Image (cartoon, rainbow, N blue to C red; front, top):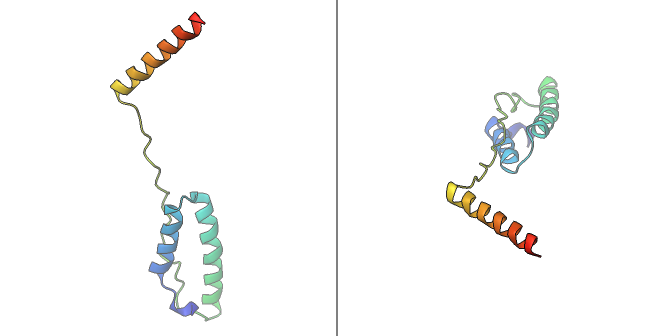
Length: 90
């Protein structure tokens, strides 16, 4: 039942969207649409409290980029140099 919906449930849904890789703009758009419906339900006394109040939409976490260490970079540089030598000899 709609009246049983709580803020922590809406927050969990928003957090799940972030964990699933949704862009913040998409999360905001979907949340605003839902919040509008809940405000309407509150306005006509269908629910006692808007469960969207207090929900925080955080920026989705970005995976840390993997950067080569010095040894890996040198190995790649050697590979490129060998590739250039081979292509010149052909």
